[in-house]
Length: 371
Image (cartoon, rainbow, N blue to C red; front, side, top):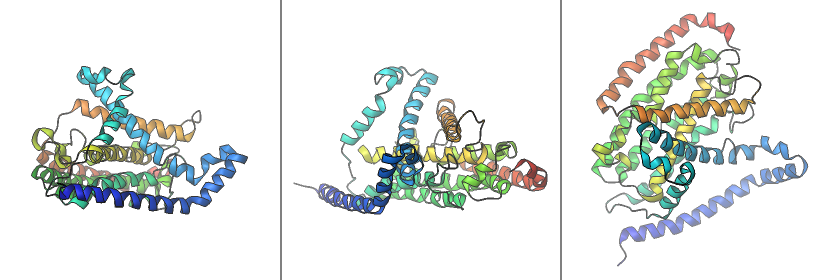
């Protein structure tokens, strides 16, 4: 006898495949002129393809880039934490230095069944991982890696970044609520408290860079740091942004929404197979996007000595920020939810306000250092 859950899954898969094909046809129709232009460039001037909008959207800094970086970050995290904590298994499993382990994990997740709880809101339960992934990936659209390599050089990129980021807690809570599981729901509420608490200092920590560059464009902020990086003028804001970024990513020591010793795996408890894999992948995609924004706001973006191209400097800086975020997992224990919320509202926000007031007082003297 076929259960209602199995009937729903089969219908969702059938209509999902049909919808995906229709969307793919629509996308191909919309970008067909760009494809033709790229083909012509390949025949006449192949190097010019690197500057086309289609290359930026699909290759770098678009889909392929934000797909490869999370896989590399997951592999690096596994190896580094294993060395720090002397965990023998992750040091050798997966062939040469564990190179094949992420591929094996991907194949396992693809082959596993997506189990939907009996009393869950099935449609929302299935769509929530997709929504979380989209919200986690969208900020990458406005992150510039050089004056030429940015998908959308939006004039108000900072505002768009926070507008998109503001939907993430709602997507997480929706996923937790649709699971119809008390552990998931408690984890979702914790995530909501945490993300709401730390988005405020995250935004306040951004204001000094906006004030110094006199621009809401991320490309404009990066271009304004040709002489001095803004971390020299607003070090407190850089530290606050970094700490708030760790909380936004729910990474140790701010992983209370997914506390395995208390809540199984928090708001992702009921997810299995590729649905769970998509949620984990979305967290690393969001990690890449936030690291890119941190580099643009405080570390000069693509600015650096001329012996490397601008895009190389951006990639090196983003890789360094990601590495520091990954190292924190091996160093720090988890903090309680009350300590976490108190740190956000009681310490980070006042520090940001003090830093902004100091910057306002000294801004006339700093103008000579900003291009």
